[in-house]
Amino acid sequence: MLELPETLILSQQINYFLSGKIVSNSIAAQSPHKFTWYNGDPSRYSTILQGNKVLSARGVGMFVEITLSDSMLLFDDGVNLRFHPNAGPIPTKHQLLITFEDDTSLSASVVMYGGVVCWENGNSYDNTYYEISQEKPSPLSAEFDEAYFYALIAPESVRKLPLKAVLATEQRIPGLGNGCLQDILWNAGLHPRRKLSTLSDTEVGNLFVSIKDTLKAMTDGGGRNTEKDLLGQPGGYQVRLCAATCGMPCAKCGTAILKETFLGGSIYTCPVCQPQG
Ligand SMILES: [Zn+2]
Image 1 (tube, rainbow, N blue to C red):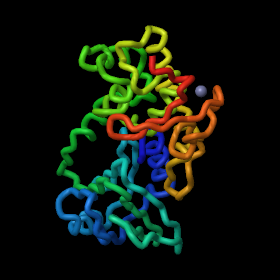
Image 2 (cartoon, protein in one colour; image 1 turned 90 degrees about the vertical axis):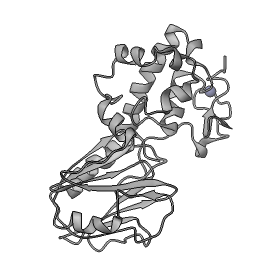
Image 3 (tube, rainbow, N blue to C red; image 1 turned 180 degrees about the vertical axis):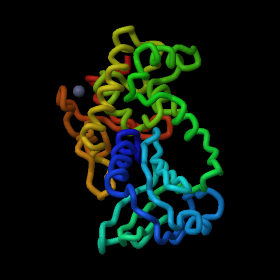
Image 4 (cartoon, rainbow, N blue to C red; image 1 turned 45 degrees about the horizontal axis):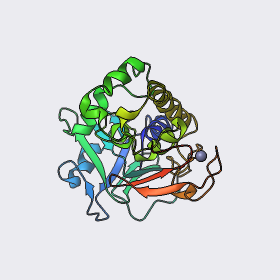
């Protein structure tokens, strides 16, 4: 699933490879997919997109947003976006395929579930997470400083939550999900089950630094190596704690990485570096 590092990298690549291209043809919902959501009738997408020029893209939390001359496209974290250069292979299954006048194309395909959203200028798209992600400061921005973070986690309703829920739910921090969470907590030496209220001042400080530094390292590395970029290449950031490293030695202490299920998803931890308290 895409999180902030990947939506930022994909947006940079879309700006580099697709800016200025003009849509000659598009097809939406060609491959039936039960858990893909569209904005209205996807058969209208080709009419909306026809002749539009790609202007720019940006990563907004978990979303990749593309601005075209007369419309907008929005893809969420469950969508694989791929650029297909001239005569390159195109996936047989896709939920949106956009072909440009120079015969290059962009495909969007959904694995488990995801949003492939398009709307014309003058209309809007109502989605709470998209709105929150646009309003709140990115954790990579200067605006997301210690004072902002301490205010974000100050309410009693937040303090009683385990760290996984604090950091990776409700888009409290846009683009930080259950994937990036694992290395952030490992770098901070904190267990995802720990309640925020049990953290010392030093631990809260370490957590703030780890959020900023870990997300920056993931982005600077070109995204996580568990995800693929616009050209289908894995990111250059080696994820420390994920399905692929489960059972492998912790890079700090050598203890085997543990996998558990917690709050409806997997968590990976080092039992020595991340004591439960
Ligand atoms: Zn360890």
